Amino acid sequence: MSSTASGKNGTWRNWGGNVTVRPAREVVPASVDELAAAVRQAAEDGLKVKAVGSGHSFTAIAATDGVSVRPQLLTGIRDIDRKAMTVTVEAGTPLKRLNVALAREGLSLTNMGDIMEQTVSGATSTGTHGTGRESASLAAQIRELELLTADGSVLTCSEKENPEVFAAARVGLGALGIVTAITFAVEPVFLLTAREEPMPLDRVLAEFDQLRTENEHFEFYWFPHTGNTNTKRNNRSAGPPQPVGQLAGWFEDEFLSNGVFHAAQLLGRAVPAVVPTVARISSTALSARSYTDIPYKVFTSPRRVRFVEMEYAVPREALVDTLRELKAMVDRSGLRVNFPVEVRTAPADDIALSTASARDSAYIAVHMFRGTPYQAYFTAAERIFTAHEGRPHWGKVHTRDADYFAGVYPRFGEFTALRDRLDPDRLFQNHYLRRVLGP
Image (cartoon, rainbow, N blue to C red; front, side, top):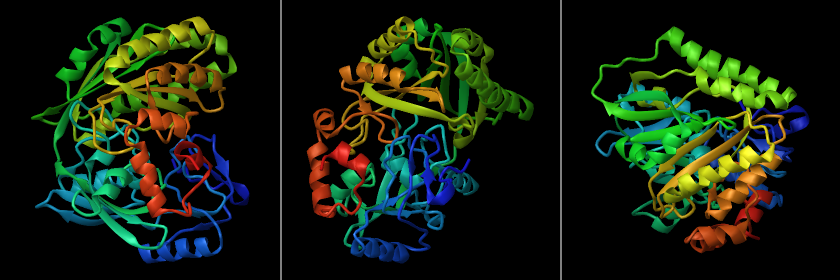
């Protein structure tokens, strides 16, 4: 599922297919020194610079008409420190390669999102997260990072070294420089038991606090036009491992979640009137199941059906009201929504522009099948999310700007002041950053 698929005539297109751009040139540096030289050359030529990962953002956060930096040669593990329990990786390393390499070493990240196609720097810089009671986003698991700044120097940032940069650059939006390496906290590999179970939406909302506090990782998918959800609870287990059987795994994860789901999306796009019926059938197709495996095999799943997504973090205590308002809006709107709504949680963290910065958060993600008109649905959903002081995922569709962010992020000014210091000439600027951070 490569996504930095360059199209014809040097155009670049993201995974969701909703962002297309033609950079003046592309560079594929094989070392940090080569990258620094490319950045200096771009500045001399009066061109902006953006690093692009796997193109999994639905916003134009990585788009540039200047110099596009591809990180595919800046990959691999630099160092595993078993005493400190950390792993240092090159910034272009895809999460799926990191997960497999760590498992081979008997190690694992504590928590992760459900897609692992992204590069480590792309995922962390946009605030990518999974769901967790105590364990937070990928960026919150960073112990140190290396940042190439506009003047060509490389800063090492941690709680001890350049701590003010560390507080911001873990979710840096590509605005402070180019991340070249990341050191994550890791732990000995462990087992998780996943329990997936259909549950009525009313029950999930009534028992939401209990479900969240009783499980290390709780999430659910609500099927619009129905009162049905599919819940997933992941908890640590003493074992033994009981992975999903090959046939069952193929049936549930490939045939139902990708194959039949894709066919249902095509049908819904062609004949919107059938969407509520399809939703009712889809929401009852998955039966309860339980399995036990190592973390990345439980947390992540293949996503072969392409979509466009908006996701907002709301204060956790606002989740139930927000979701009820979203359901009421869909029910009365005449919209035909063919994709489940995903709900997850995260504890507060200390990163300036993390969507969970200084507040316990719940995430509501709305999706539409690629090629289906999504603006009306997303606009109506965004109105609900922003009424609850929601914070949009930096890599997913939204229409917010710097004035809005200054109101919902207490440390917004701290971030923009640091950017003024590290990139005064806006070498790493693009249209998206001008909108969300201000000129």
